[in-house]
Structures are given as C-alpha cells and as structure tokens.
Image (cartoon, protein in one colour):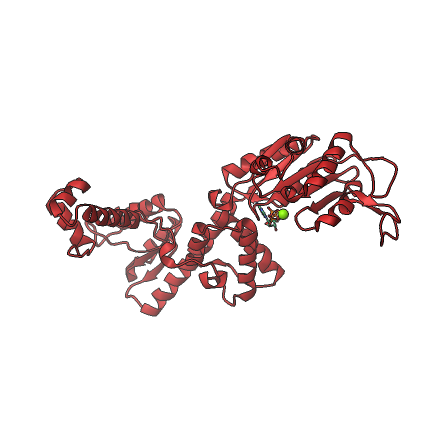
Length: 414
Ligand SMILES: Nc1ncnc2c1ncn2[C@@H]1O[C@H](COP(=O)(O)OP(=O)(O)OP(=O)(O)O)[C@@H](O)[C@H]1O
Ligand SMILES: [Mg+2]
C-alpha cells in the first residue's frame, strides 16, 4: 500500500488470499477497493484458487480488470497482463485528450494553458471592434492563426481576409503590392492592378512581419492609417478604403524604434491593443496536447494506423524546448507520421535532438536522488574533500553522509 501511494501502477496482479486471512478473500477485496480508490485507472488482475471462481466474478464486479485461475500458466498470464497494459495506455491517452481539450471559440486553436486562454479571451473581446491589434510572438507561435481568428469572430468575416508578408517581398515591390498601380505607371504595368489594401475592402488586412517594413513605406502606410485613403502608383485619385488592420512581428519593435528603424507614430497607430503570445515551452501541457491533435489530424490525412506516442516520445515532447514553437511541433509530428511504420511514434521517428538523460523525470524519488547527488558533489568540492566540512555544509552528520555515499554509490576519493 505504501508503494501504491507513491507510484501509479498501470497493472497489478492481486491474490485474493492475503494474510491475515490467507484462506479467505476479505483482505484481498479490501486491498482491491483501496487500490482502485487510490488509482481508479489501475488494471487489477485477480488470482483465484480453483474453488473460488465465484469470488473472481465478485472481484470483477468490484472493479477488477480480469482474473486468472491458479495454478499459473505463464503464457496465459503474460497475455492477460499485456492486454491490460494496452488498455491502460489507451485509457490514459483518451483521458488526456478528453480532459484537456479545451474548446476555445477560436477556430482551430488548441490549448489548455491558462496563459493562452487569457489571450483567447482578449481576442474574443477585441474581435468585434475595429481597434488595430499588434500580435507579438516568436516564429511559429500562432500569430497568423490569431489574426484569422480576429477576422472570423468579427462581423467582417464574410469579407476578405488579406495577408501580406512585409518580410518576404523585395523592398521595391512592397509598395505596388500594398497600394496597387495604374496601367502605364511604370514599364511592365500593362494593366491596372489593385493592391492588397484595396483587395481587403470591407474585411481585414493582415500585415505580417511589420517590423521588416522599410521606412519609406512606413510613412505611406501611416498616411493610409490616418486618412483611410490610398492612391495607386501612377494614379491621380484618392480611393477610400474601409479595412481593419492587424499586424504581427517576431521582432522587438521598441528597440527598432530606439534605433530609428521603426516609426514611433506608426507603432502607436498599429498597437491600440498589443497581444504578447507566449512561446510553446511556456504553455503548461500544451506541447503534448497539440502533439496528439496533430497526430490525429495527420494520421487521418495520411491514412496511417498510428495510435499515439510511446513513453520516451511523450516525455521528450513534454520537455523539449521547441524553439520553432507550434510550427516546429506540427512539422515534426507530420514527418513522424509519414516515416513511422509502427503503431506508436517513437523518439526516433520524431527526430528531436534530445538525449534520454535530458528527459525530465517527474518521479520524485529520482528528482530527490539527483538533487542529493548534485549537492553532495558540490559540497565536496567546496570543502576540498574534507568530510566534516562537507557534512556541515550539507547540514547532516558524518554517518548520514557516509550512508548517502553508500546509497548513491558515490566514490568520494575522486
Ligand atoms: N494553438 C494552436 N492550436 C492549433 N494549431 C496551432 C496553434 N498555434 C499554431 N498552430 C498551427 O501552427 C502553425 C504555425 O502557426 P502560425 O502560422 O499561425 O504561426 P506564426 O506565428 O504566424 O508563425 P511564423 O512566425 O512561422 O509565420 C500553423 O499551421 C497553425 O495552424
Ligand atoms: Mg506567420
């Protein structure tokens, strides 16, 4: 029972005949109840003597998973145990998905983290208004997804959502992309072309990577934001446009402003509301949740019978840093689905650059041991190997110190 309070055992073999009542079943049933109270997910397999088939049935109606009849047949029990593990894994995974899948009102957005939920509620509240929103976040954190949500949750949703990536278009082309041009405005302008701003009429204009917009264009964009009119290149008339502007960047706009690379007045126009999107690694529990979502999505898309991630893969997903955030996670899971030929995605399939000893353990005993060892090594080196001094630093007696050295198999002469 002590062990049960410390660890979650997926599968337990339980003999009903336990002392002090080895010939009866009272202790066994009491134990079964306690086990299932502590961990209702545990699969308990009950052993019954040949005379006690009835108690086996009672055990199952009390929540045991299965029973086997003594004497033990190794193959049979192996089979039952294996099946129990499988069911346990499925149930755990299912619980994870059901319990955590918070449906936000933002289309396609999956999260269980409080930080993200706060952001979702900001987005929901801001969406129906006309205020300009600046989305700040590292690459792959979901800036475009949030920009689209702002559009979808507004009464502009049936009008166009037009995105332009200011970082991906050569400087000399951005102006015509944004404002359009008249026929004959320059060599090659064989017909009139509308710019993105005009194409977004009535809807939403998403200015992605706004931090990369060259200064001369910042002036022109500012003018549009102030006057709400544009002029096509080579055109003579002003065209008024009604668009809602959302912008995003992974850059530190404040330092761009200090450096004179970004106009402060434009910044204030764009940032009536600023939303700071956290990195994936700072969203409690989201990596695994998202991984399962992507797994389901891509398994379906690529018609693979993949059921989940194995233990190492799950641990790695949960503790990896995800520098490329959700986009990196999505790509890694997609690749794994395509490459895997098993039923579970392994750490290998994921190609996460992550060695086993980096995988964060949540086992308290392991954590304590690791901390103990680190402290001992540190204290030893601080005291130049002097044992009394080491013990004093650690706040323990010399015998306790030697006890730990023995327990952890440390060699102190080094
Ligand atoms: N919370 C989330 N739930 C589900 N999918 C998400 C979530 N966040 C991002 N994604 C998905 O991850 C991918 C990257 O998101 P998105 O393109 O919005 O990020 P971004 O910040 O614009 O990235 P980049 O800086 O690379 O342009 C997209 O496929 C998006 O659908
Ligand atoms: Mg983007």
